[in-house]
Length: 165
Ligand code: MG
Image (cartoon, rainbow, N blue to C red):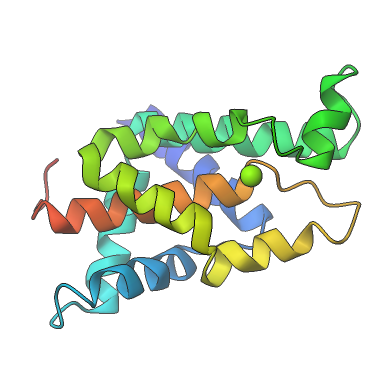
């Protein structure tokens, strides 16, 4: 359990390093769910985002994606992939494949939500996307990772999971 805790702390720290808080992700979950369930509360969304983030596969995906962004930001990747990730080239696509490890844990609803958020880019996802205008920032993986966490948490609620997945 100690290892999981360390991993969890590192995951939250990685998200904080890109100015993303659990509440920011929970707000997106809330907006996704309110249409289907008008009794949903922000606290419930926060709890569900937390549950998603506690899963080892999710923490691994978050840490991997955000570490790639950071390394590319520092110019540490070899060419030509350094430039491709830095530009967030439309045909790159690995930034959308990696987060599937997060959404796949919650079935088809997770995948559908992810596709929707990837297109709509709402809330904190949009903010992350806007940061790309500052060329020093690399957020190629960050927006998709955050969208996947929100998509998974919304799917978790839709599936009616309680404390256990
Ligand atoms: Mg991306």
